[in-house]
Image (tube, rainbow, N blue to C red; front, side, top):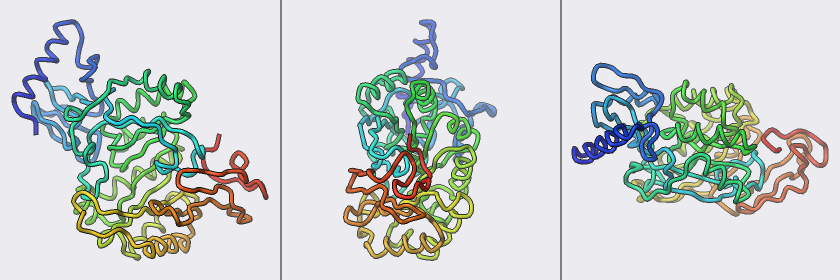
Length: 362
């Protein structure tokens, strides 16, 4: 919650910028947000299904967007609190430029409240509460090139709540010949995502469960908007991979997993990669035990029975996470942790029978 003192301080900063002939939109700290409208004295944020109604000085559920002076302002544009170089397999994206390095950035904030959040120290804070570095879009591109990264990843927190920073950065990345990938909960309205889909290449979406009540109780969100995002991403030509975290007593029910896999096969296509990820005790679910390996193997068996072609298990290093040719069974991409051997894989085709494998390979 923002105190009156904090709000007055914000207003003074913006007033000072205006007096200097600038505006919130050109400030290193404050930028005018997109996807909002006014209703009376309130600002209505139209970015995500939360639809926050913000009186003067109030901040949305995401902690990243605030009504200041009757305008919606984004607090985190160009101010990431996490900047790393990661392998693309860590996202995880297994069908996008195997072995590539990603220049990964994250800004504080999230529009969900997941009890199992692994990055809660970032996602459950405002950009004004974290230690940040000033990294405008042009500097992101420069740093990605300097570190030989062929991908920029928007990740760590919930990137959609700082969509303006993403849109600006991904547009520059595309001009520079650098791929952009989104790691997200998919909890966003269709219109903003449609714009984002024009400048990103791939998205790893967390489908947290296939039950609306669990979404409400575990994540404080709703299921249908995520399903809508997944379908829209496929329609717009964004490469999609899905992660489902198998949480004991929450998302490990075989029948729910079966229904989810069936929906993926029917609505997104059987070639959509699905990653079942192992849960470890954390945050508000620290009392639970890690997902048994047998439950992960059972989930994969269900997915394969429902005709999904590429099913992986994450967070268990000793389980098979390789990619095989659907036509001849040849081992194409061998993974050991984040190390990838692709000697049997030739630019999207099987090195043995030349069958095409769906993904982004060039």
